[in-house]
Image (cartoon, rainbow, N blue to C red; front, side, top):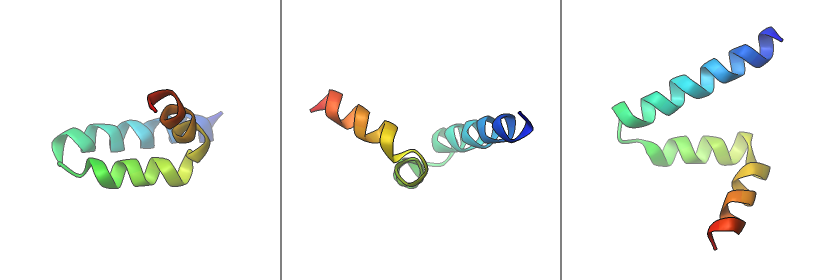
Length: 47
């Protein structure tokens, strides 16, 4: 459970950092590495 909370916290920090920095590309690349299955699902819906 702690590991799950830590993961959510890390994602939130990166997500907020995406707005503070303009490095959304790095954020998307990180998501693609860590959560490639969900990114593929979103890309399928978008196309």
